[in-house]
Image (tube, rainbow, N blue to C red):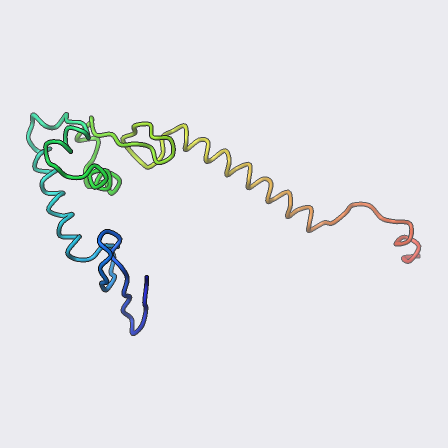
Length: 145
């Protein structure tokens, strides 16, 4: 629920449902603080040389931080897969493990292809509507004479 007025926007926290004055983030200050603490735990774990090659499952088990939250940190580029090469997360479409963006290459290509086809179809329909039928009836021709 979002309530606006007097320049302040009230909304519900996406995590706990509490009402708060929305700013840049979509969670309340309490949940934000909890997420920051979880980030510190994960980052501290990964800073140790022996843990830099840990995968997502290993990090979850060692830190007890939820997998979804670690994936959120990855998508926000707060944890960079260039520094931690074993960190992979599922593609949002098919579930294949990826290390950047939100879709794997295959799903991204499919989406672009579908978008291109839909765009062509819309353009074709628009063109057909603009020009109308390209034939004339005998009655219309006689009226012009």
